[in-house]
Image (cartoon, helix red, strand yellow):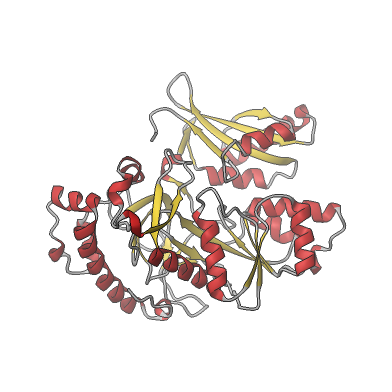
Length: 435
């Protein structure tokens, strides 16, 4: 299929018309090539000819992460010889899922990120410093790499970590843009302050931020975003994506949600009964990929809880916008009568200046209920830290979790276990969850 980069600027009716045509093509493709969806259509008596509008997609059952974990290769729609790249999910929510991409899929991935960088005010004259891994089957790294090349900009592959090396490279090559996990930017800020770098006058003017949210539901910067921006006044752009969807939602300069790319993905937000929610209401992000050859997905539930907005953005795009992630459905915590999501806990801890690093752990206690433990690294004496932090947690969470304190080296081992390609901020050891 031919992609339509200007479709986001068209009225929603035109976007929906395009998506319905693309959906019909996808259904025919799945029925012919996908072992998983052929079986699904047969088991649920789905006649794809009865899908007469985009809204009729609701008659098709959803697909879950568990389905992909249990039937990974049944989602493959091409022969092995057509696969040009193997990527994989990180495995933070159970067994990793392999995603196979064809040459067309790699081109689609590059187009997706080119459009994302354009949305985030990217220009061919930019120099992007990639502070993330391109190995370990990490799709995002290779997507950003190819997207920047398609944009026509220059790139510097420094990889993650080592603030001294990052600053040396920024200074030598005058990189004006970085791609980074937001929490690592705090390490860059700390190193810069310790070594006399004036953060208001660096070459860096903008950051494409991945993996962690920078905003609250009202689009104001959250504690992490504010901590970064107050010390390093550069433009911050949030993104949302996953390996399975092979598509990104990226903020424009307005910072009012990640823009849907309507020629690449159909987006639904569903309640617990698979019913679509209205704009401004929270539901589970459910996606249908458009233009994917290797492993296309139909009504795939991501597990992420968001809301969406369908008003025209000040940037001129009419495309629907996705809010920051409230939390993952499977990560919802019921603790002493209080419902919590990890991002809310992260936001509180990010705002406590004497907490240098943290990881949140949830496990099942002897009563079969959720128990919460915070692993913390602080430079304060432990007794002083406990006295200071307990009232904050009580007022913000209405409960005080178990507190475990660690040295910097111990915290490093918790956050970066062997084989991990991401910093671990949440550990779920509850029983009876997805394996």
